[in-house]
Amino acid sequence: MANSSSSLIQKTCSFKNSNFPQRSKMLTSSLYSQATKTELIHFSLHPRKKYKNPVIVKVENTTIKPLEHTRYLGIIIDKRLKWRTHLEHIEKKIAPRIGLLRYLARSAYEPNNKIMINIYKSLVRTIIVYGSPVLLTADQKVWDRLQICQNKAIRAALGLPIYTSTKYIHTTSQLPKIKEYAVEILQKAIQTATTNNDITLRNQLQHILHGT
Image (cartoon, rainbow, N blue to C red):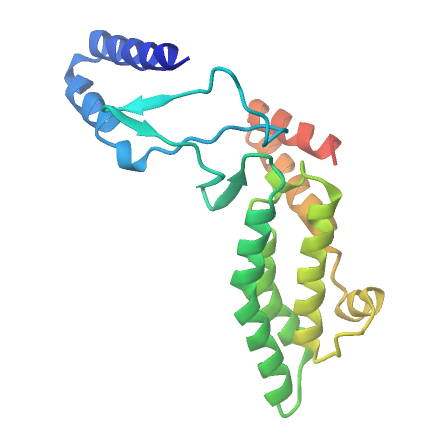
């Protein structure tokens, strides 16, 4: 497998060098001098299983060790696709923002629910639904956990106690549940792709939608 990986890189360089000679030097530099920025992750449903022939990847004689998770475009992907690390990242990031919502709700002389909900949408919901097309393929437990995040934030924004029911806070705020909102975003993206005649993107997004 290691030989195959190295061979693939060499063939890629060879193809680029022969077809784009003026860019060969740049390619070689970008491909081989980024060992410190290269990450490797093994996706497996059986994390404790040991394979007889583990994959070994080397870049400039530097062995790239497998990671438990990696970040790509702001999404933290773990090797079992359980999204726990990504969820923990979201919870940690929105915690001080929820605290700010709670402070604003308590300190306002005449709290305005509409304004507070708009602040919630801007400060918290954008973080929760970031990368939602990817997360829509995840287990429902992931969305249950994200829903808890939204519940906490709405209660804080409206100055409601922690025992206020989920049904009540969504009725009062007139907000959809977080997964429903993510599906709405996906449907709008499909409409945009259709309008732009981007068939490939539209088909991929529809595949995700049909799997929800």
